[in-house]
Length: 283
Image (cartoon, rainbow, N blue to C red; front, side, top):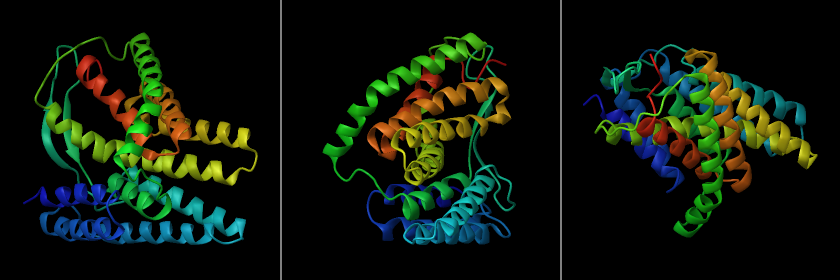
């Protein structure tokens, strides 16, 4: 019973590629189910409703002439979504799916848990603010082909950085835990982080700056650096590796203008890290 809200959250994520009514209905049902199972508590629904209102308000101001109001609305949405994603607001306990285990000798313990804040923020940003997505298998294939060289370069840069820093070592392995890790990482972690840092921060900065070259430089750099800084909980090496990765994900988004490209590169790097290197890091 306790996993029903998260199954509905997955349905809401997938609904983003189906129809607006699908993701709205699934998200609403997931919130109701979460209160019954304890996955949401106290004022959590209020925070989610406020984030939805801020996302709608920003979209409303974006269609108007007043730049000052749009900047104010965007700043509010940025701050509130960031606070939600960093778990600064109460009412969002984490549901543990797998207790921490050591995946290979010398690795720090790793467990799998899921929660509402980040993925809900991602759903609302992609559902209300940045609604551009691939609409056919052919468009998806073209997007992934365009992202493939970016993935290879990003993977090489990130893992070289992590190896040089002594954060990980080459450690190929297989564990059935990957079968649970993969959908959680793609649909919760990658979707939510790419929605915020690329679908909102990078996309909206690029729209706001009128000089094309300057817009690219600032939007890509800002989204990459902020992405790296959001990993401060793992220490400075994690921030550095995250920033390097962020530049790759940002370029994938810039190259294709599709969130699916950034998600694919992000997930690909994470999957290779999981399967071929120390995960999550050396102890």
